Image (tube, rainbow, N blue to C red):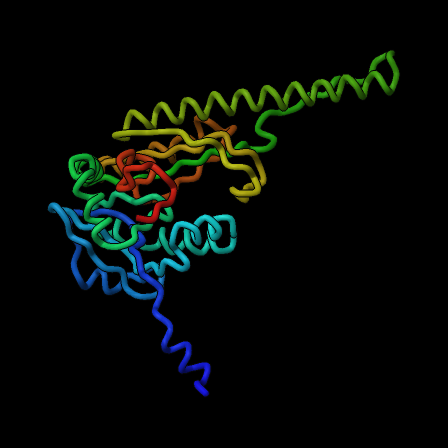
Length: 275
């Protein structure tokens, strides 16, 4: 009678696909050897048409189309995969421009990766050219509590109830005005930053449960900034504290240029694919 170990040893290994992290012009083998991919092993290069795709081995029993559809509904799995994917893209971005792939872009083999790169070569080259010598920086703006004073109306002959309603109305009016002032300040900050940056865009403000901030976010901006203009950009962000006391700004980066890459190497535009 055969042992369980012998039966398992005879089972064929699952087919392995390629999880695409991003596309670069070129990358040193030593750099790839130091970057851990989705499967815990070093990532590898798939060179095609003068470009290089950086991929992880992706066993299709976990990363195939059906498995991905199921796993992407698992928040624990999704967070782990997103962190691992981003870590690779971030390491590549430290070496030079990279066009990040969408999360969970998986091909059945390297030929699928190569075919995608060849089909999108012109767009990918243009994107890499656009990102060269530049980095993405984030600027988030949060409402500052108490930046606008609230003047409650004094009690009048109307009695305690009437006085309370008046005070409450004054508080709500002051809060609304404070929000409007902060929103106008966020618009002004974004416009000024766009004058220094090569490109700028505004994302939807994050919910407080996601941002972790105690007050609402009024600005969630991303800016593509030339290295030569970086000090001017950061100085400008720092100068807004006195000019716009109603919002608190937070500068983050540099990040891989997720916000400024429209031509990603997944031509179907799907969040996941298995080819």
